[in-house]
Picture 1 (cartoon, rainbow, N blue to C red):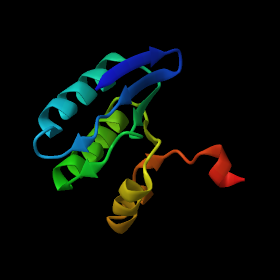
Picture 2: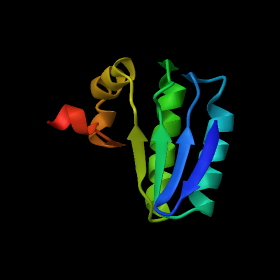
Picture 3: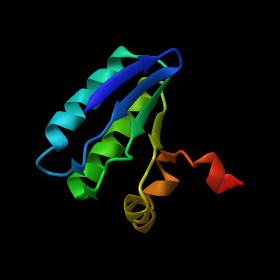
Length: 105
């Protein structure tokens, strides 16, 4: 997981798995990034292959933390399989999912 800063916020690239085995480390890094930065915190999920309930909890917790520090959590590059999980759990209505410009046109 890498954190990159830019003038409008930070980008965090999530690895292939966000599950019970990886969630503690990811949660800690996301909370540190939210507390230390400004602007949007963009989660690049383009490499994410697998997410479980614990991983979904990390996303929801980071979303709540972002709100508490007056920031916004943005999911970018969400693979179709992960998007289906977000839709089934209705988290796509709670979390801000960035839609690619090509999908809008």
